[in-house]
Image (cartoon, rainbow, N blue to C red; front, side, top):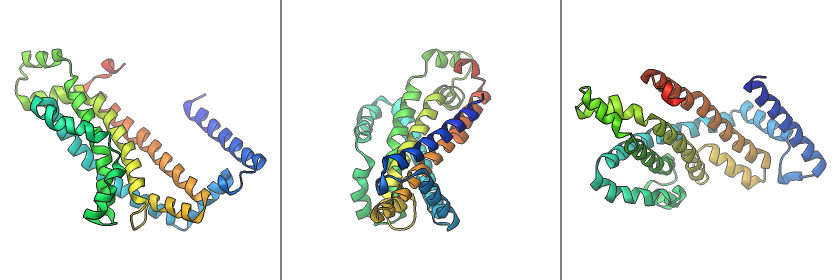
Length: 254
């Protein structure tokens, strides 16, 4: 039995158990049934509300994710290559990582107002520090034998050494950092959208809370989970496999 079939059968069994538990335990409005949630999902697709919210959230998170990767990787490389920067600004970054991104929301509202800029700012903050630390670790943990071997074979220039040796060697840590940054970005995005104006999955979640519509609330949670799973399997894993193939590092991976 393939992995796809196993997952499909498990999901069907989970839905059956969910619906059975709803009908036998009488949860009422406190938690929706599987059929109610699927109906809400269908209605959201049919009237376009769910699609519009999803596309708006994806636009925001993609902008923030790209910014966080660029900023995070740049800072990570600088900290890894400069002891002075690592012991000063790097120390601050480690401290900032412990601060929840939602803590910056009041500042974002004051600076930008209740709009997309505030949400993108919060989302970027939520993912940047994770990407910075992952990039720093990936560069600093490169075995010294790789660098010495590259220099022996004539790769002595810093730029060539960086993109021909250091980047491929740091790929596993960078991919892990991107996955973590993507997850943290989603958390920050939904937190920011809960109070921002406009349309988005966070706004729909807040709308469901204010109306006491638990099926809408759970539908949004499931949409976010589905988007996260799809992005991990269809984007991050494929990028990882393509990079391993490009640099011929399958043997090292296994």
